[in-house]
Image 1 (tube, helix red, strand yellow):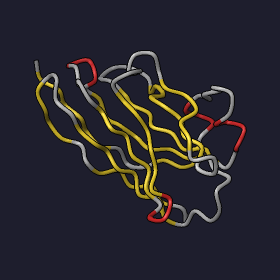
Image 2 (cartoon, rainbow, N blue to C red; image 1 turned 180 degrees about the vertical axis):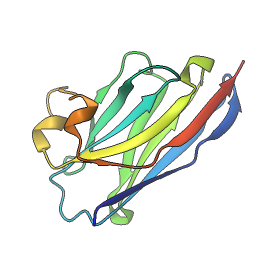
Image 3 (cartoon, rainbow, N blue to C red; image 1 turned 45 degrees about the vertical axis):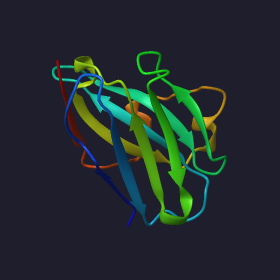
Amino acid sequence: AQVLEETGGGSVEAGGSLKLTCTASGYTGSLFCMAWFRQLPGKEREVVGTFSRGGNRVDYIAESVKGRFTLSQLLAKDMLFLEMNNLKPEDTAIYYCAAVRRVAYCAGGYHPAASEYTSWGQGTQVTVSS
């Protein structure tokens, strides 16, 4: 079975940093598009960034977090990271890791909707206080 598990959430003050980790198990090969989403209170799930597992590169970063957040991976340990710096209260959300076996979803800046992803973690809460 393919499982994603997020860790690293918590509470920080504005301007602080957090690093989230998504540990994947049961994923064979590199033909996956990985992503971080977040869901703010009362809002729909929105993409934060996408990452090409096989290409080992960030493909898309949302404008709202560009310059503050970055994605990376440690493929040998099946880990995807979301490093968040200069956090703002509006970043408060539940953060989810997602995956889909579609290389094209991590190409050319295409960032499909949450419904296109087939695997999800349980989410981790990030709270930023002012």
